[in-house]
Image: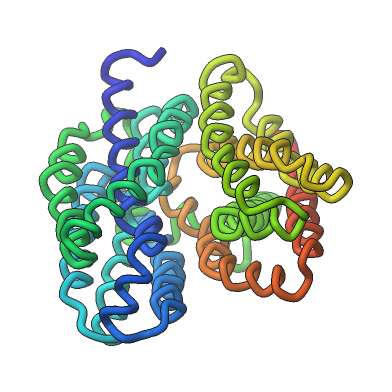
Length: 396
């Protein structure tokens, strides 16, 4: 178990992620329908605006990462609590499409600087090469975001309406998230925050793998391969989070079985992260990622071969693999590139993943409509490609 100070940091960052994800990414699932009715727009329009916010968060990722490298997670994460609150207040006051666009634009700014990449970068600033247990602990706590956020949003919407729900989430950012993040200490490790020419805007090590011409071709190749893996795995994770019950029904499961089996994904994610935190903490992050990336395609193969009888196995394999791959998104860049400039590099690496996450609900929904069970072949094939690409990476 981590020592007291480290445990406190993990808890603060993990709770901050529960709040951040719960009040942004998981909000439309509960509020989109009442929001659409009240504003007299189609529900698809609300989700479309939300997708635009995710694209905006992707575009802002590298800049947010540089801010984290320069100023540290304490300041940036505390600032994102204020921006989240402003966006949620604006959302509560929206009266039409323009209001929605403005509010979700502000929330997109907050998501670009306040979700997993920011928490991972803060952990790396504190613990450098030893940040893997902290990253795992953060994802372990944040894995309960939907478990907390969906029932809470449902309760608040029923009692206060969707506008009141947004205001309560905004208040939570100010009275809970902001004070929590302000308790984070400034990293004591020399060099944990970029200094000198890096902080002033000159080309930094964080951008070296993406610069043209690259001074480290192998580093750029590794970065591009990792960006592909992260984009594919986030696409699959978002597609399953949105369409898993429908996909299982397409495979022949009843709606009751599909919903019940879908509930296994969350516990499987948490169990896999606990395993990574404990028994597998000495296993190479690269090995863990390779095994995890194969879990979804293996589950897809079982589902396609055995039919609905393998639905539970599919859900457990997908959930476990996704749980470990979330950790890998934080640990693999640290393993291959080190701690210096980690925040900006994470912003670049995760930019395609954020775009894929925004596109996944619509694209996979179309695949299900057109292909039925063929959509499972697509998600399984994408997962297999991520596994093969990880096999191409050199040993760090």
